[in-house]
Length: 63
Image 1 (cartoon, rainbow, N blue to C red):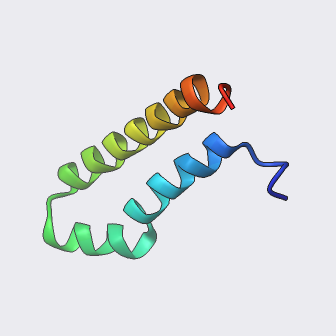
Image 2: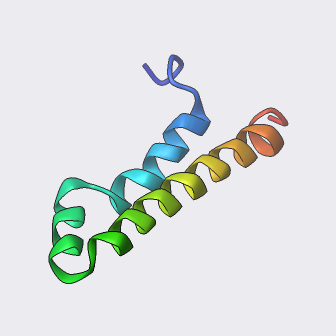
């Protein structure tokens, strides 16, 4: 299975997954406004995508 999933996808999952799991979002919503949690979700998704693309473009293909 390790050969069927590209490494940049795994990297994106490892960055985004712990930040936005269900329990963490639930706790964040109980302490912060909904707009903040939404912005955090979008920012984390965009930065995870950028990190995976940078890794894929500059590091993964160089190996």
